[in-house]
Length: 183
Image (cartoon, rainbow, N blue to C red):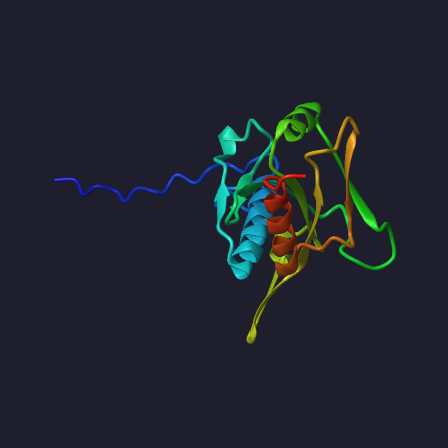
């Protein structure tokens, strides 16, 4: 009787956008996108607000998810990039192309829509989180701008003075409440 040979795990071939070994599942672009959502989710969790992520193939409204406030949710679009610097000398804004269908959907929304840009200090994913004996430090920061009244501009201009923090979520909760207050 023949003894069956142990099967070798099917190791996928490298993705065209991947700079790492074939054993990784996500390519560089997908890793960056997932890191951006995870970073934002961590800030929302720290602030005590639930985040409901839109399924990746269902983001037809150019919305990556909703953050829940007492009155109603706010809509969120998240992008993550290493093409900008968090601080230092340089531009005080970061500019991201706004696709026409994004703008159309955002401006039809009756509740606030916020565009969040997570900036990674390094392009190499192994440098995004600095692991050390005392914990871990993320080499990233998030900035935001409200976009539901963006109009027909070709770009989303994100001011770097608008850092995403716990205080931001309190401001957003007030802006959501204002949508339901008589003027």
